Image 1: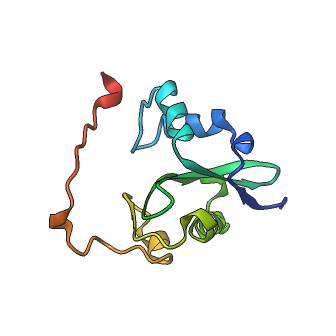
Image 2: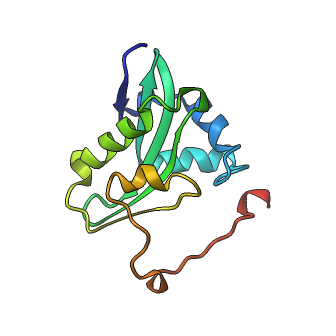
Length: 140
């Protein structure tokens, strides 16, 4: 196994790999390339590397003072089960720009166990939260 690390260096993001994964993911299927690029520019991005290449990714949309939205978290299937998701999350929650935030949020279909290890819980008062959701936005 090669060196494992997580970085926020934008130059280390394998944009082709990340885009190829996200464009097929359940949460951003069909995302246009230009929207993907804007999403990277507007977020604090984390790339996880192992065996000499990037194998995972996450981004945090934040004001770096009070709020953070964790999004686009993944480890490539061939690299899952080796603790890389945990390493990625440990790095994210320890990042100096993300300390002392009042609220973190995320949405997940199937990774509740991973996020629970890092203090994420179901919404205590879901009736207070609202959303504008357009699941077909990338198909128009």
